[in-house]
Image 1 (tube, rainbow, N blue to C red):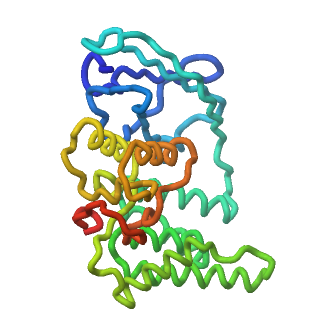
Image 2 (tube, rainbow, N blue to C red; image 1 turned 30 degrees about the horizontal axis):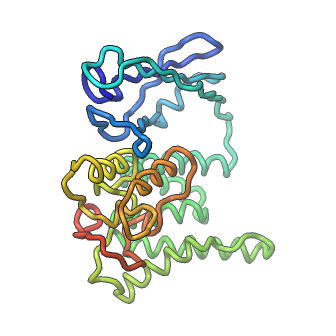
Image 3 (cartoon, rainbow, N blue to C red; image 1 turned 30 degrees about the vertical axis):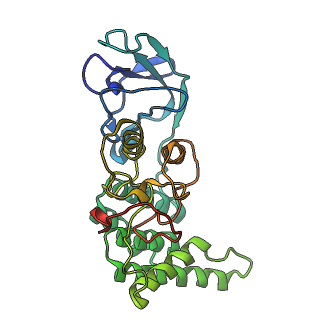
Amino acid sequence: MTSAAGPWTSALRLVLKKDGAEVPLWPLLPLGSPPARLALGSDELGAAAWWVTPEVTASIAPGEYTLDSVLDTTGSPEGWQGIALSEPVSIAVAAEPAALDPGLEAEKALSFARFRAWEGAFAAALSLVDSLLAKQPSNPDALWFRAEVLELSLDEAGALEAYEAALEALEALEAADPGGAEPPALLIRRFEELQERVVLGGGQDEPRFRRGDSNADGQVNISDPVTTLGYLFLGTPGALPCEKSADADDTGKLGLTDAVYVLLFLFSGGPPPAAPFESCGFDATEDGLACAGEGPCG
């Protein structure tokens, strides 16, 4: 399947409606670089995704919206030609309250910060989370996220300090409310793994990588399963920067299931890739997959 010009996603048209009437589509940022051709089959699938930035989201008028997708390849020079319609998606947009309580204030700040980190703007993400911590210095979620961003930025000493602060904040909450939740096991495990690397020097001879980041650009998005599928079935690229990164389900083998695993995580609420995923780390399981340890985790 192709489009008349450009990547195959050029054959897609998104239609936004409010109260039944078509309205201008919100500005969208495409995720990744879709190929010109898309091959679909019983074992092959395609996906297209876009971002709506926080700034654009804040400017959207409140109301009830529907979003439809139209795939039109009637003008394509080759491949399947026809028109296919998607099921409409309902979107409810509400105005932000005039005053945010601490919980909503933290949720908003962290949502903005996570978006910046997702696009690789780690300095901007840290600035946002530090502004939140200036108001809520013991917010464990903010401290935890700060640690993750510092680890992604390869500031392992700073990340270790932030993980410790997040654990201390959670322990203080638990002491104040003995019936409350204990510190998450994931946070404790991340802290202990980083502590082993920084303090004890463990695993220094092994390559560091981030699972799910098949193209080694420092992000996990739609371009990664596309890279995995291209490597497996099209021979493009001819080699992966780190095969371990593409092994999303940590089976020790590369296959279609790895690309599907990441797609389900990104778009269907599926589980995240196996550790190390939140940041660069080492493989806890032995396999024969190659990894040069270069790129953002090198």
